[in-house]
Amino acid sequence: MNEFLTWDVLATLGGASIAVSAMTEIIKYYAKVNPKWIVLVLSMVVMYGVQIVYYQTYEVGDYLMSALNGIVVAGMSIGVFEGIIKNFEK
Image (cartoon, rainbow, N blue to C red; front, side, top):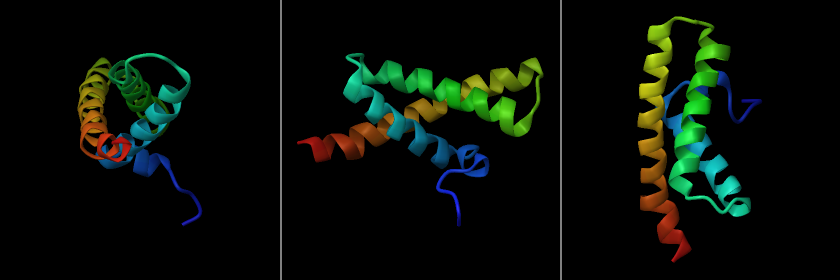
């Protein structure tokens, strides 16, 4: 394994959730914004990025599905934050 994060991994629910959680923690350190908004924006950016770069499809239905997947990834990332990271911060 030469790479930590590939498009194949990022296209999965677990890979996208981990990437969004990690990016959120970094951005949250520098920006004074509610982390849940950061998670939502990053989830949409990651899922649209996967749709454009990895799948290379440009249909309207595919973008709607990416938006739905972005909401699912945001929910998973918030769950990771609430369940794991918040307990370490205590």
